[in-house]
Amino acid sequence: MNKDFRKGWSIPRILDTNLDRAREGLRIIEEWCRFGLENSQLAEECKQMRQEVARWHSHEIRLARDTLNDPGTMLSHPQEETRRSIEDLLQSNLCRIQEALRVLEEYGKLYQVEMGITFKNIRYQVYILESNLLTHNRYQKLNKSLLYLVTSSSKNILSIVESALKEGVTLVQYRDKNNDDIFILQTARDICQLCHDYNGLFIMNDRVDLALAVNADGVHLGQQDIPISLARQILGPNSIVGCSTTNPQEMAQAITQGADYIGVGPVYATPTKPGKIPAGLDYVNYAQKHSPIPWFAIGGINHENINEVITAGAKQVAIVRAIMEADNPATITQELLKKLTIG
Image (cartoon, rainbow, N blue to C red):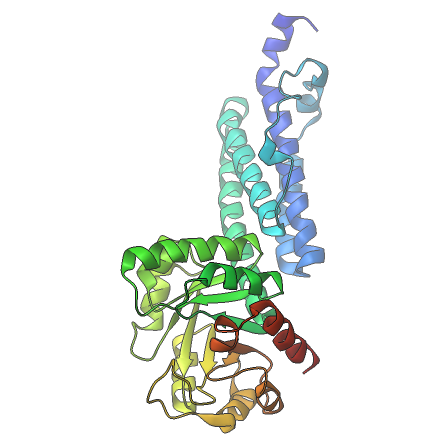
């Protein structure tokens, strides 16, 4: 095929390449929705979009393919050669789909007006799919997190958090009532990055502004903090919002206001809540019977009393000092997770 002839096929070649790219990316997302998430609705959405893309992949466009003379087949980038996690894989392919759809939208206007309109609509559908995937993935992790590490002040905070993440913790809350905002902001960034590197969730305590600044997965609010609805308005609908509760009335209120999970406690007396009367194991048992959303028993729980908490009905537990002040955080994390898994 001579150069002048190939030039006349430039737009169909561009369309052919990006139709393939969009379909391939959608198939990768579809397979995860189907087999990874076992979510038939999301898988069906991907399938419908993939079939709509295929409808435009006409014989005429396919004839324009000229792989041997394509100068881009050998182009690559190191980031394309590895995937750090399933989230990284999904995000890379979602970006790939969106870029391909934008190309199809723009060049499609030159090929056929309706084509540009169609791919603009599909592109917005993919944006919605991306939000739904992010939300589903976060909630799936939240539901499966047996052990929730809540930090306290420590000069070794990053190494302790990383040790816990290495041993299987998938949910971490950064709580700091003592340091200035500059220090808290930088530490939050570091812990958030650690959590995401280990495929975990990062929750910011109290500070909605800092949660937004560091791209946290959510925020945890106390009874005296801003309303749940306002936190969600600031952080967006895909963020997790948790709330501390100490009695059935506070639990009911948090659920009504739309909390994604609640803290139940303090189960035992703890210096992290000075002067707070323990809610006790009765409240743990109440939560087990009445909470329709995920809940974490919290307050003075350690490897010595955790079996009592599990017996009372807790399946998910938040830990502070037992890990943060341990001589060997990794070993304690292993022990606690083992007991929760058996329980």
